Image 1 (cartoon, helix red, strand yellow):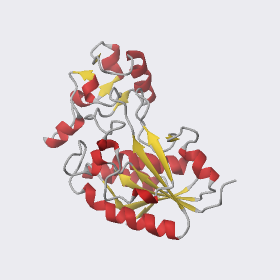
Image 2: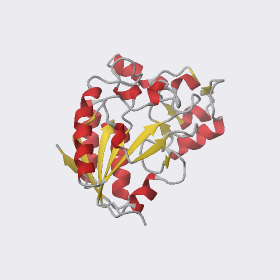
Image 3: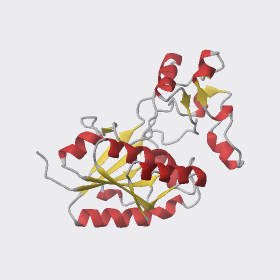
Length: 249
């Protein structure tokens, strides 16, 4: 049995494509600035002898979430840049698939059947298609330089299968694919999970709610996270509170 520990910090997806202001395809203003707060929490946790888990998205180039793998779709970030609400160009519904409106690009690594199965698992809608990001074995998938990744005890890879795109850090696997995030947390007798990283209304809330679902006490460390859309973030914070997740300012 692995040594018993009480707390774990999960650093969610603090990678170049999100946090690097010079090259990140999904960079949002000031996301690089939370590195200091993330490191502060990591150092404090390590000093107490507890564990640091960090997730990274490691997508294949033909991933199901990339707008470039569809004909006539554009990344949702294009709408954000224009300060416009997303349109049907920015997401995919089951109705579109069933009516034959969806065309998959030649470079895609998934089939129409796999796309349909994934959309059905997401309540019949994929809420966004994204620019290519965090492609495995590239600089953009690496941890952002200001995050002290040497402190990470266990790294989780997520999004490495081309035909699905869950946001949560749970359910995914260690780099050697031997254990999942949940396996690790149970092995270490973790009682409290602290969530930091990116982004509040996407991968952070998904990770926090999954941790709560699995029976852990959960803390969302607001100063060490960042958001895309302010209104969606307010909704995400309220949903976390409704699920008895502690919001730490």
